Length: 521
Image 1 (cartoon, rainbow, N blue to C red):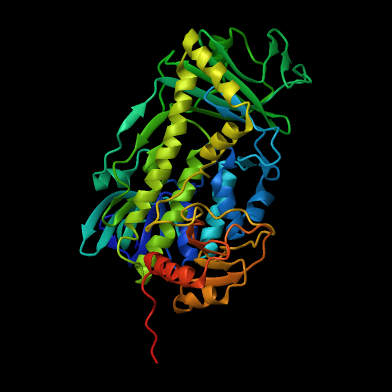
Image 2 (image 1 turned 90 degrees about the horizontal axis):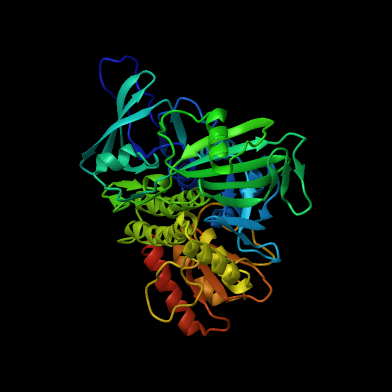
């Protein structure tokens, strides 16, 4: 356990070592703390803010992270705290058009409306339950490297102190102090638009029409979705239970100070400039202002310092940052734990950067495509948006771009030739679902076809890999070796001979989970 820093402000007090220091108690940092705790590592989370934020920076979770939370056995807990059950995304904003998934029985995107303060509370509770320590009001001042360690200089409520660890992970956002201290550059683009976002309720005088549009006194019919004018972009959509999400986008109409909070008057002025009329508001629930950025750190690891979440990447669209950051955490945690427990094969930790940069590149691809759809104002841009919507009226391209947005199309590269098509991809949905399949955040060899020779092949790794059996309709493979982050490390085809399956399985076990432990006998 970590000794609390001493009293007084005149000297730097030394704290006992920890395994991993996490800078930042946002969703990525708290997710990482929970994942490390499940893997038997006790991390220390340092957060400069003295209290948990009450700002609703994000409205909820969407994409692949929901599938991982289900495999962890945590999704029911998150659903219970949400404002509604997990639901398919019938329409999804993409640039300034909407992709319509409402005609699909199994759309590739799902969402859970869970305001960020509530999400962070759940993640923190879970992290502390599995052994993490969260210190609020403890600001990271700097980082020193030592032999085999990294030391954080911290200013806490009782004064400055140092704490050392084997690894330090920066989950401290776009202005990351950890990234700066490591000398890691953050190249990219800041787009000129100012985006203003409000969650509101509307007065009774506003009428919701049968087609989803709104009849607004003094304004007329206001179409749901996006309205483009010469002055900018206006968007409105329902969040359910009488709450509406309203957006304006303008190209730098006035100077703004990002350090100040947006006021209702500022938002009203923006709506008036874009629409040329006022939007009546009954209650203001949330207000925020932001600019889109497309940035990615030139590396995610510098020896014992690593980056995750917004400290590693920023995407020029909303609704994807949480998914990406929390999946970063799941990918990194089990690899860090393997290093700390002493069984990680050579190069395992390097695969964190390789794999999550690949995923970030995919996210950057579709979010920058959204920039092109959003920023164009001439007839050619209008034609692009019209053609785009025609193409995505068909199910196959719509399903494909939905998987891209969700992060479900990522397949990490795997060693060897002729590997099963599932290898590297996220474990497919199985019915009935053997949840929580990955509750302890340990690798699982899942036998779907009653193959005792396959189960026996994993016996030498019994201390690291759980072996389970299950039955599923229309099985995609006879057996799956699943990493703690939900990605398939190996799969054997239906009825593949044992002389082929068993050596390939043992090779995959060694590649990802190290040499078999030596047993005394």
